Length: 251
Image (cartoon, rainbow, N blue to C red; front, side, top):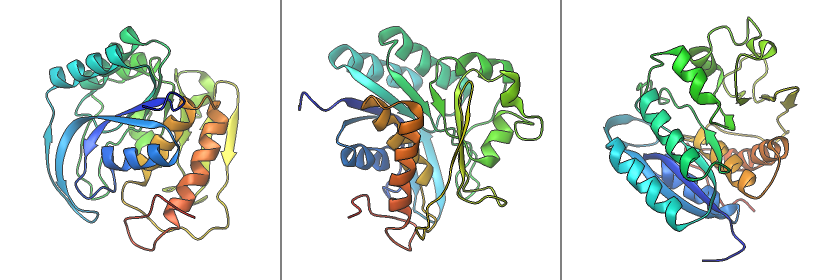
């Protein structure tokens, strides 16, 4: 294993089409010249167009996998994707924080698939707020942010310091400013504007963006730089084809 490539771990679902989940994450890691590891939280039956079925991985199996990998490797960053519950997520976060407190954690809160299959519900807002302090950045879209934090936009929750993590609010579902992402840091809001590049919708684009950010954090980039560079990467990916599956190597 190359000594100068940091290790990044994806803890996410397995999508046999390769457009989302750990396969998409590993492709993204490789393009960022980091070493990619993966632990699957679920096995799915899906295509880029349709979601059919999911089987969740037993939580204890996931936890044992995390413990073994961290015992044997220095893992700089973790990207977390689909999980079935807040309890499941919290156990993953707590385990990582015990074995490696310095590891950066990015959570892409995939609550529903693009075909409206529901992966997870928010059972307890208080539990959610407690566990966010263990996460360095979350990457919801406009639909997900209102499920996670009702009134985030209308009540300007970020101004009240009620959210204990940084938020990259993806602009793909924002009809008024399509493609404009907003990074909410503790004392700053940064607009990441879209380029003039022609982009096409992609299955799993949120997975690609969050894993690109995790890779950049592992490369010791600050959050602002990591998100900005990840946006450049995702735009190249979105423009690589006009279909729902893109190319990760974009000249």
